[in-house]
Amino acid sequence: MAQMAFYVDSSVCTSCKTCQVVCQQKNELPTDILWRRVLHYGGGTWTDKGTYHVPDGVFRYFVSLSCNHCAAPACMAVCPVSAILKDEDTGAVWIDQEACIGCRSCEEACPYAIPVLDEETGKEVKCDMCRDYLAQGKTPLCVVTCSQRVLDFGDIDELRAKYPDATDAIEPLPVPTTGPSLLVRPHKDAQKSGEGTGQLLNLPYEL
Image 1: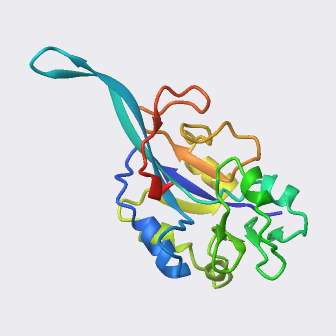
Image 2 (image 1 turned 135 degrees about the horizontal axis):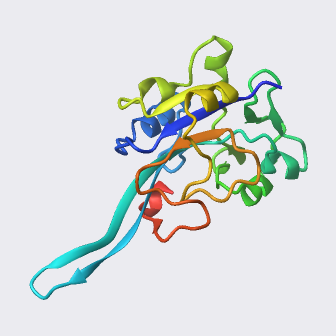
């Protein structure tokens, strides 16, 4: 099976959220559903010097995240009606809206908190790697529109060769257990998954 993947250069991401916006527009999503979202991760403290404060280990960086179209999708494994499928030609994991019963099992299983229930339809939804674009030989819209060229897309082995310093294990992402098709170039302050000293800084509506 072929496996396409996303690459994210966290070292230069400015959190402009263009990727979020174009994804919502293309897929006509309500404002409370994000198929791609930019995570803000940071930490450190400020030391009180009396009349001023001095930063002590303060840091922040951004990670643009969508479905990782995993090699062993936890969501697909638990779906009781086999509504979650993996495309043989691209490796894209997608949800058959006709078969989905909205039981939310996939939500509970996904370590990246990707699937979400559309309250209007009663169906689970998520990034499908722009399957309609791929069928036309096009690149996913979030990648094309990224103004800082933070995102890249292609065969996962080719991306690994192109970006040898990339990883799939930086905070706030969980320790990878499902074979995520994601490569991230770490920010200079990035911390390894499971060893973070910071916290997710996004406002609630962005999670």
